[in-house]
Image 1: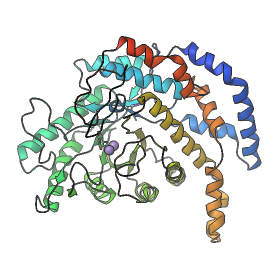
Image 2 (image 1 turned 90 degrees about the vertical axis):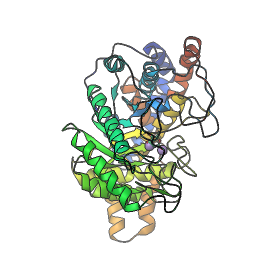
Image 3 (image 1 turned 180 degrees about the horizontal axis):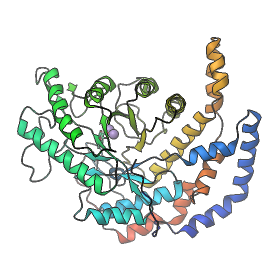
Image 4 (image 1 turned 180 degrees about the vertical axis):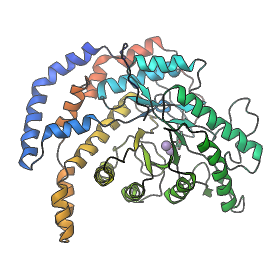
Length: 438
Ligand code: RM4
Ligand code: MN
Ligand code: MN
């Protein structure tokens, strides 16, 4: 997604700070890496091959996750948080510098609207950053907006409101194109709060009609991601509520339309890895919004509550990649709200969890697994997954980061850099008033 050959000329965190921190940890890191290498070699896995694969993994980060998030009740701002898009980009670059995993930023419009979009692009490129899918927003009204989205946007009963929502998505494509992004993610808040408020079939008809107009405006190498969500803001029925409706719509729209799985957008106890497998099998798995959740769309750090689920998802992804033979390219993104932690630290926390889940999925002994499955040896099949999951793969993650110029220990290095404290001195403070997600 959004690959551009960027020449880095600016650094959010001075490289020598990262190098100094790495120097302190180098001997211990090398010993741990060698030990893991020996351990993996015993089961026929070459650690260098795993690190090479990991170095190709890239996960986008959300511009809207760079400021302290809030709930419906309150937002507690943090000193030094970014106040405009360029500062958000700088923070994203800091995450990538130490994690080596997050070279692209996903923008959300009109939240990230800028007078000079070329300046935004150039500033990101100067930091070695590109852009992921752009996100439209027709779930809120903006100041001065002509027609309200209170009763819907792309599915609204009024054609003029639908036209306005379509127009906004077309503008997002235009801006995204200038940023060299390659995808548009559409999540709508449309639905109903009361039985009888609207007809399920009619709202979906209107959605498809609107999405066809957006699809028609996509550049040839773009993808359109349909993001479903079970509930909220609609509490009775949501128009694109689950992966079933999502894949039906993606199939109706055409090959550029794919489904996006946000890990917080499912009913409790739903088997998300099974959804991933189904979408991948039919070529409709477009990408992810990684996060973790306990109750609903909690937007907690990826892997912070349910790391085994994250591993099982990556296990499906690695298997799907093998089956697809090169045709498989989901766009990985994080979508989190950081309400009580420093967003940069939460993204580092999640980057580690995601990379760890990927590596653990890579070291699953697939040949043995298949044999256990064929002979119906249930316990050993499960054991095979558990053995990979329970391996401490941190030295492999550290090596991949190190080889990308990142940190052996991202969290401690970020703390040692004094980045946030320095930003608190130079950045203006943002108001605490009001709730809401950003
Ligand atoms: C939604 C959904 C979308 C995100 C907004 C801010 O719940 O996850 O991906 O754009 O929140
Ligand atoms: Mn999302
Ligand atoms: Mn969400």
